[in-house]
Length: 427
Image 1 (cartoon, one colour):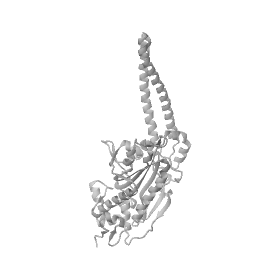
Image 2: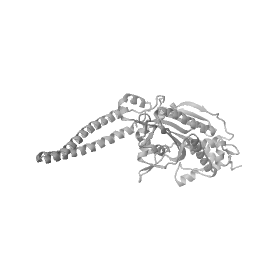
Image 3: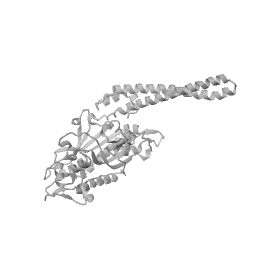
Image 4: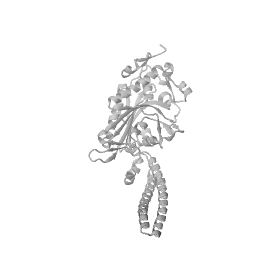
């Protein structure tokens, strides 16, 4: 969330910048600051009442000693009434703080200055591109191929769970496992520490990274325990640092994690969401960084380079898009999307988002670092990126490497798969 003092000092800037995200912040900021003013005034009054009560309490014993029984009794009665008032004020302060926090949670992060205006993905700007688009010798969408090859079974997944929960089989399962291992090893080689996080988080973790309340309807919740199935490893991994003070010399913190991800996303009909293009459960390897504020955009470029290098090694043509305000997430200040070309569908598929949240998540998480020179506390910056999401990578690999003989495995994966081709079963 945005810092309340920052909001108070930069109202016009915030209102103007959030228009890029198509969010009208005028009324909510006015209401927020009104509540905060009332909270401050009540806190000031209550602090004075507490001080008065303490002073009176100290004087009661002395008054009794001096034989001033009536004055002591009057002071005693007054301390009782002051205590009641303090309790009432404390209750009101709690209510005001809850209202203030609720409003703070409802204000999106302000976009970086380079974020272009626009209401939808059509306004996203292509900033880079790599690879030559080559037509495969056999052109088919992946959902036709996997049915013939029997490597991913959607009907079986629907039987076991429901639509959007595929079952990977045989060499399809091994290819999936190979991709996970490849992404994790590449991340470790780039300096990321691997963690294996829980697949469920509590409400505090959901609020900490901004999935709650914004994405409440998209998350699978375990209502009896007030847990949520994670939509991405970003949530548990970033929450490792919730309520943590990091010595400056230990920055940056770099983690990589594999996890299953669960999203109750509403899909539309048609080829754009067919097959592996959109799932309710999918595998993903995520990179998370905790950075010094002065270095977070340098870190973002490093993360972009890392994701691009993975795609180059898989020989998947890709392009990078700078997201416009309307396509930017609630919590992000700046996001780059990576899309790979899918030959069988003749379209681009998003496989990664790399984002800088600046101090937005860290304010929620109370994630700070202590400066080495002056021992002062500062709020850190958080970043994350998919490195990579597997379903559309798998789709592109199948479509781009399909031949009459079978699906050719990229060379970098063969030490993980143990085979260099998934043979055409009809040959």
